[in-house]
Each structure stands twice: as C-alpha cells, then as structure tokens.
Image (cartoon, rainbow, N blue to C red):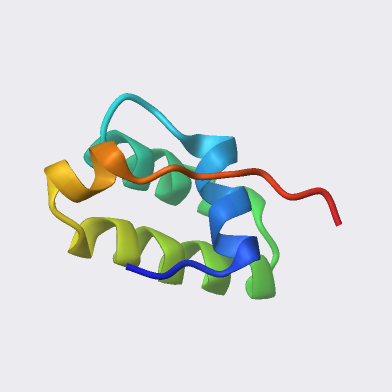
Length: 66
C-alpha cells in the first residue's frame, strides 16, 4: 500500500497499536477538521482499513516536516 506524505503524517499523528484503532482515531478527529483535511483523513482511514493487520504491523510510517 502506497501512502502520500500527507497521509503518512496523518497516520503518524493518530497511530495506535493496530490499524483498526489508528483508522478509528483518524475518523474520531473528523469533526475538528476542515473540509479539505477531512477528505484527506477519510481517504487515509479507508486505505488503512484496506490493509491487513500483518501489512500494517510491518509498515513504517515517517512524519515528514515540510
């Protein structure tokens, strides 16, 4: 699964012990996001949901400060 820099940054911000909790944390923050950020967050959470647990566990996410 390929993630954009922006998606990886979101994952780093909301990362928990597993993919389900990470996706849930991203979605829980949606009410506090503007429309553009919420769209990115939904797209990111959907990608995380599409992964299996093993792939998520070995994936390394890096926060990139732009």
